[in-house]
Image 1 (spheres, rainbow, N blue to C red):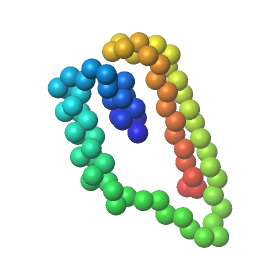
Image 2: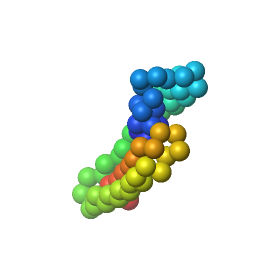
Image 3: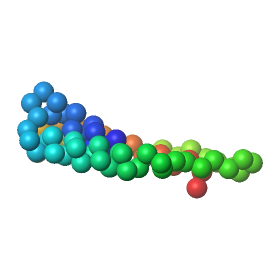
Image 4: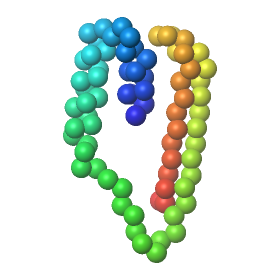
Length: 74
């Protein structure tokens, strides 16, 4: 998700490098389609989330970058 978000910043004027990176991301997604999440019945599960933001520290385009990480269960 992070890679797709970062690539979307260059949609208006992509270079050959951006196209190559986009193809690499798509190959990764194609190879991980069978991955999943296992839920076990009658087991306690807690949702924990974290977020962070970096405002205008990107040397490429001086835009903010934010990220999220969530954990459900163990």
